[in-house]
Length: 290
Image (cartoon, rainbow, N blue to C red; front, top):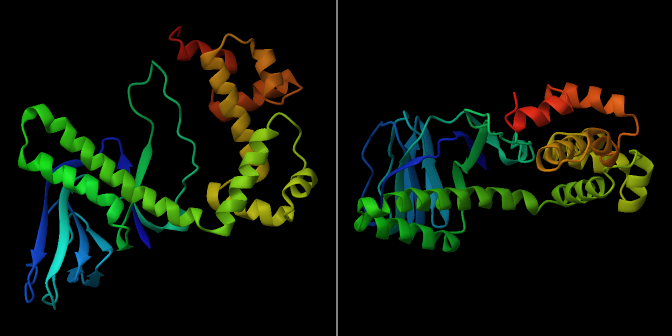
């Protein structure tokens, strides 16, 4: 399944939506506009072409048409077809990628009270393919209800409802990954590394406890996080150290020991290299002292 990568924030903005039955023989007109057009087919089929690429969107499938691309129906419906459609505005996709290349586990920088902009984040939405419609219908019906009786009192509710729907679509993409064996192994490796974060890393011990050959376990982790086991342990140590610096008064040398660094000076060097500032300056900056 192709996936569209969208930058957030801001979140997409709801424009309009509908629930329709396309009668046999109906065909979509040609159009190019700067909005996303989400089509979810409940029964029958819709035949759409976008920038020369034809799609047959059958029952239980969706198609997300992109802004700035020309789309039209390349053939009429062969039978009555029930569908939901929804328009929202957002910037054009940053990229199109496959599910296995989505960097789900990329760490997002934790904000501080001195930040003026949000850290870079992304939303991942399916372009075309199968979708479980039943869990989406409550959100779709809520959107239609709010649209039909919209007052300023509920304007925020409508935008939030769109956010819930998009989150469900992204969750469906994520569930496909969770069904794979490599994901299950990756999760076991992550759990092991979290449990043994403060201990010296030994590939032999990881393999013995998880009953997987180390090279295989490392490949699974790399596939789903982009990191080797040693790199993932280092990231865990740095994130834990940052959390302790922000949320506690524990002295820096003690934090170094808690996250697995016997050599305090080495911890200072590694933290500064990874985060960009020393632990002391990170704590002071986050508390607004500098």
